[in-house]
Image (cartoon, rainbow, N blue to C red; front, top):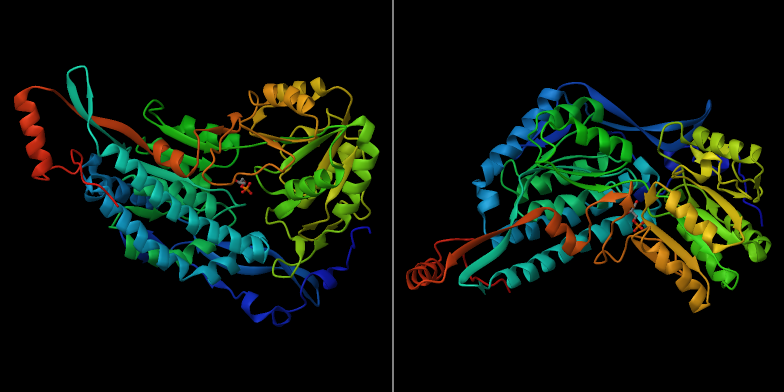
Length: 542
Ligand code: G3H
């Protein structure tokens, strides 16, 4: 069954009233920001938010005006950073010196306040970035679970740090300490989850934070401001809104950012790092571009491979850093695989984020459908065909998914991260071609292998684990489970994130050590038994 290309008024709503009440949006004036513990009203210029969802009026489909948020100035951004630095106070502030148990209490208090605004955040995820209702709920719930898991992981870490190490005549206690002021910036495809997977570990380890929502996916943070303000001491969490170019440059150039946690493009990450005047002081935690290949071996279960590749390449319209972005299929099964793939892609339901069963939704990025069209046109000029009927059709902000075969390796779609619903498929004869491709690729995040022969799979696994950081067998590429390490080589990442790794990347080991003399043993015992220090302590968190 080919993709059903509908007329615009059959796919986009003709009025707000046509949308189920729970999913309806109204103009959201998010004119507040959080600095120094205060939710302040922004009286200056605003940035307008236009939804990728269009409403079909008498003059045709028009993107819905969704709201606005502060367009902060460099001065206001620097004020937010100053608040974070005051709260950190060179590591002497109340937050960085607070006991781990007390910091955990603050984060625990945040969770129910966050959960109270779930429906509003989920609705804004649908309207701001076109995420389906199911995926938006998943993003929210996964984030809450991540926070809970982070608390448990920190308790575990703290338990192991509560004991003393005795080595070569020394007694020491080794704990993890915060690093300073952290700038957190998440991506538009997971604006809540991937902001919080750096923000929460950074906070709980005693750092103070300024965070800027991504370009798309800003309004959904506004309902959370009261939860932050009520749960954390002044200056510990501060928000930045506005043009990245205007407000982030001055923060980096100030040299007052200790950790940059950024998930986005490699180009922007390089620019930000270079803006910092003291590069050796700056720690970076980066999640960047990826071009994850899927490899279909001759003995693959083609039905399984197709369903995983459709999920992997087209969940949330392919807008995942972990998406399968190129498929190599063995020539012997290429025709059978491509026929099933194009059929499966043709059956994906295109529509609005709140509609039951919808998989392909409007794209939030300005000009994205036209850019995808250019990629596809070039691939077609290079010898590829669009296999699925209706593939590549543009309807306002919608792009009907396109399977390209045989895509030529030199064409742009095989080289850049398309981050959209375009699936280039390439035939190969010898697995070495795939290995060579991954070696040449500037990205190195994950790969997915589909096959059954253990020897053949192993011939790919062993070289690929040194090219990427996760090889998936008979399943799509993905970040989760969140307790697994999530990282990449080359241009794909810097630092490793997982529930427990994130606690490590936002902290540094610090120790108190003494020679094991009688006098030192006595003074250390007195510090501990008198509970004079929060660091030098054997208090145990249950
Ligand atoms: O965009 C990159 C995300 O980390 C992907 O996460 O694999 O769970 O969709 P996911």
